[in-house]
Length: 120
Image (cartoon, rainbow, N blue to C red; front, side, top):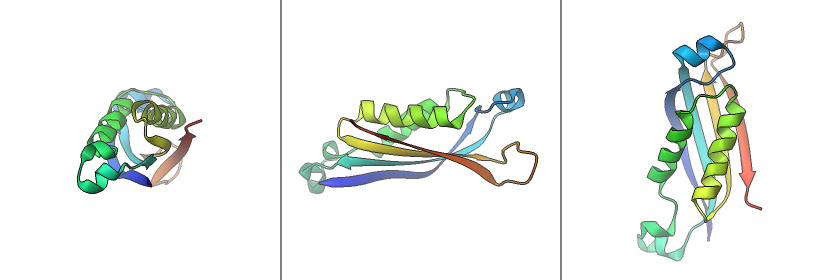
């Protein structure tokens, strides 16, 4: 049976950005992840092996967020691709990363990037 596993509102202090001050002082980021996956019947019998463990999913996101990058597109793509590599049952992954108070020269609560990958 197909289903979706989501983690919403994950918060990180990370060092992503084009400008040197962003990569030295860091910023607050929020990550949302949605994974479409095949959920095995065993999951409906309370067996964790029949689904994607969201603790493992969080750990994967955390690891990628700890790697500084200039572009959020790069980070989101790396997270989505790693999800498909790590979880054989994952059919596609959508990753949204938001940067709070981006340095755009004006008031902006957050800037976001969404990347989706699909198993071929």
